Image (cartoon, rainbow, N blue to C red; front, top):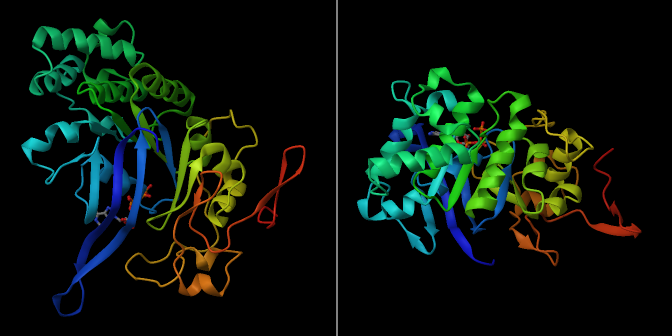
Amino acid sequence: MSDPVLELKDVSKYYRVGRGLFGTKKMLRALQPLSFAVARGEILSIVGESGCGKSTLGKLMSFVTPVTTGEVTVDGKTVHSLTDRTGRDVRRAVQIVHQDPYAALNPRKTVGSILITPIVANHLGNRQEAKRRAVELLELVGLHPAANYLGKYPFELSGGQRQRVVIARALTVNPKVIVADEAVSMIDVSLRQSILTTLKDLRTRLGVAVVFITHDLALARHFSAGHNTMVMYAGQIVEYGPTEEVIENPRHPYTAILRSTVLDPDPDVVHDSGLKALPGELPDLNVEIPGCPFVNRCPLASDICHTHQPHLQKDLTGRSVACHTPIEWSDVSGGEMLASATLFD
Ligand SMILES: Nc1ncnc2c1ncn2[C@@H]1O[C@H](COP(=O)(O)OP(=O)(O)OP(=O)(O)O)[C@@H](O)[C@H]1O
């Protein structure tokens, strides 16, 4: 990859979820070891059903939660503990924006204080410089005239305005990557588009990379058009590559089924098209299974899928798929693509 800024190497996450027989620890495998990188200024969408590990991955890459195994690095540097002062610069290079703008802001602090405090605390300017920077950031995230917002309390703002303040706060420490975890899912549908545009503008204006975590394939297609999309299933990456390739000509049967279930035919339509329930259930993450985690829901499964776990393999188009029986596409007439498998019936 050209110019990676954030790299995850064999990163996994197990949560302790109680005690089993004889007091043994019961662990839930939220993420299998996975590796990928985010390039400077890249937009990467991460999509998948509820429980597939998207938020866990977002928390690991922004140093909110420690990894169980593996390593997360920013410009080749890592942190050895999430509270280690020497790793502060590395940690603050990745900022996370959560879905709930109501819970994210201290109701007793003004917008000015919310933005000025981290700038001063991180020695990025004195109070006067911090105030100037706060105004700049509010303008940047689309709150005009910015000076009017400094004295406001969160309760005086709409959900969309609060989320803009949350994004401005993330920018106070000059991050290299913003992880937006379902950042518009609690925002009124009519305001989503403009917040997404603001996030995209940050990439253009500041060169910051944006990792966009969503359960909504249509939003991913829209937001990361021209960039990359990763599809997750049961704590694993099942498909990864250029957004148009992954979503228009999916090679993993899971991506294909998601696509046929949820997508609006118009790629420019942004609306609430969350994943509908697929037939079957996610596998039990408490149990280690030998084969592919999707095997019980997969219409293309063959014998090997029950016994051997498929690994992510890159094809000639630069897309990676973890599947023993990936869908083959062929160009039949003047660019029209035809799948070998009829998953869309
Ligand atoms: N702190 C925790 N302790 C125990 N299990 C957890 C914890 N956080 C997440 N999990 C479990 O890890 C798995 C992955 O959860 P995660 O929240 O990362 O998925 P997700 O794809 O983001 O889903 P959602 O969109 O519903 O948040 C789930 O089975 C979840 O119940």
